Every structure is written in C-alpha cells, then in structure tokens.
Image (cartoon, rainbow, N blue to C red):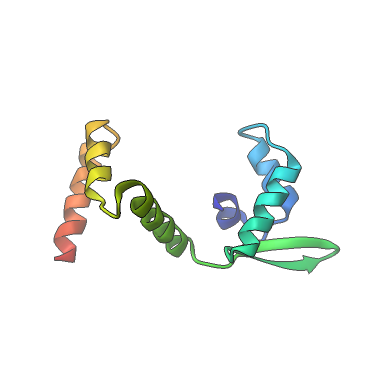
Length: 109
C-alpha cells in the first residue's frame, strides 16, 4: 500500500519493480496481493491500454487507523497501553516521540 499511496496510479509491474529494489519478490506474489487488496476494497482498478491500473480506494490515514485498531484488538485486547509501554521499554520511542504523544493527549482533553 505504501508504494501505491506514493506513486498512484500504478500497475502491478510498477509495484513489483519498486519492491524489487529492496528485496527479492516474485511478480506473481505482487499480483496476487494486489488482487486480494482489490477484493477487500483497499484498491480500485481500471483498464488502461490493456493493463490494469490500480489506485487506493481509501485514504491512507483511514487504512492505517483501521489496521492499528485491528492490531490492538488482536494482540492487546483493544488496549493501547501495553503497546505504548512495550515501545517505551524497548527504546522504540524517543524523548521527542514521547513529548509529541503527551502534546497530542493534552490536546484531546
């Protein structure tokens, strides 16, 4: 999805070539994943010059919010606190990150 959000509209070949820069991946794997994402409503496709062209069906922020909510529900029983504690304990959050979180929390009150 990151590739699609950055470069849309894209073909399977566009996504494949972008992903191939970072890791070895099969063209058919990319094609299958994009078909699944379309079936699930994350992508829209249209025919352009005998090739399917894909673009995001939902805004990036909306998709990420849903994925985070699903992750929290499945892994942390819907609670964000254990995730945040884990990130702090494993030094995944910098002092600046924590400060930004505190600001966001204060603004929401």
